[in-house]
Length: 216
Image 1 (tube, one colour):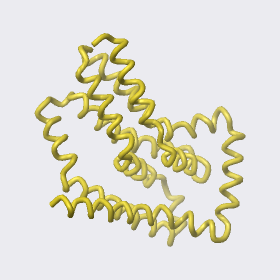
Image 2 (tube, helix red, strand yellow):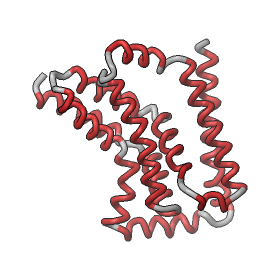
Image 3 (cartoon, rainbow, N blue to C red):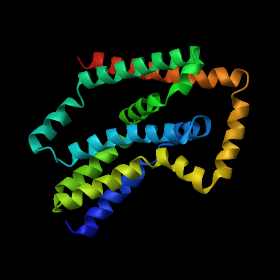
Image 4 (cartoon, one colour):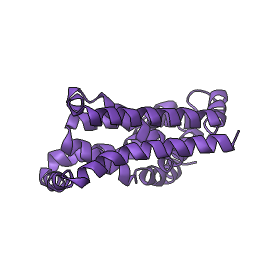
């Protein structure tokens, strides 16, 4: 396949994988309410997961290992691991809610949030996997494939790093978002917004466990 053919098949997949409204909302919330450092760590967590997917999809670790991972990734074991991660993070959020001062001690939880956000993004994962497989099947050298994979990963993580760019180029836009969220944090809105991530974690874990049980 020609270079134009590879790009024309990979680029649309990479752009579609970047369509993640929830990731954009989470990253914007971190940028406005916490700090740019928290958003960076969130992005790093996402990028780490995307990198693993790209490397596996492109077959850079060998065909045998890639086949093994592709078999295991649809196994019940992966469902159980993801469910455990979601439950653990839900408990972490509950503890933070009961001890608000602990949230200002550091932003390590942002990295975990990024990892979970990407690992459970079942819309983007197949697209990233397909894009990386196209690159791996091309006749490009590894020195060309690797930078291309970095571009794919960066595009997929665009909803996470975009608020950082906006904060530097269009700070007024994020200021408006901050004003709206300040109103939301008052009264009942604060309790609901705080409970939603926890409920989402536990519901996601329940769905994964149910899927694992039905496929035993």
